[in-house]
Image (cartoon, rainbow, N blue to C red; front, top):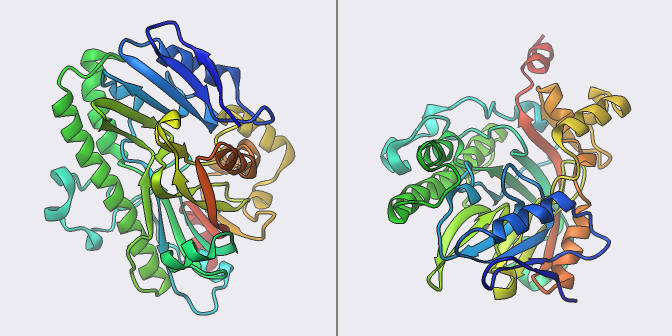
Length: 372
């Protein structure tokens, strides 16, 4: 299967969307791909099957250019998903949900400022809002037993999945650029890349600290990640800048492509080539705006209904609006996204993971009630 390609209006730029005709791809997202393709120096825009509109640039895209554009990476530089093995005896979701730490609050006992990129300790070890989450899941279906065994995974194993990024650090880096240059190119690419690389390392450290906090709270040992890939970044490849916004490195890398709190996620082996800008999807991708999800969700569901998913898993979220905004129905079908990745030869499934407890933000009121 070939992606549908559209010639752009400048030089040899082109847009390729790696999605089947049955996939949900909004015209606004495709329009944004063409707008990006028309930027000076842009060579190629690859849209992933989770493509959807963003603020000024598409999300779920990899964009190759001779010019470095910080706004194409966005403010959450280094945002990504890490997968950690975790070993628990007789895991009971209800009990474990009550023991998750408050990941909105910094726990300084887990910090060592000497090892923090840029020395930026503010908000380190916190999850943030939006689509960020921490999740206790079990390995469901094993599709490639040899690959799974190399990763130390088997059906029924437990894993921690942590999705977050560089928090205020990345925002500060982008703001420093946009306040002077707006959506224009980086005037000093080397200086931006140095700050960017700090934020990427910071995001990875942030995910590791959160995993350690959760493991400690659940009475488990801390273990290193078996997968940790960011999906908001830029790298120099073959003399060009490869920007990824909501797209992960798929060049012989293992990537956790996140579903929703009410569906499985899939750990895939990426083998994307140049035609897809060496990238794969990072998740299911939004199907509804937050405003639409909030309006439709309130008409169909109660808060209590959204705190337990059709899979029987639990959702820890004290922010009622966020519960509706991040409802599973607000996202595309993860099975369709994964199917497209495989159809286009960009990735193959290794294992699925099934949520048990998904943490969004602490539910302080429920915790107090439980203690009484």
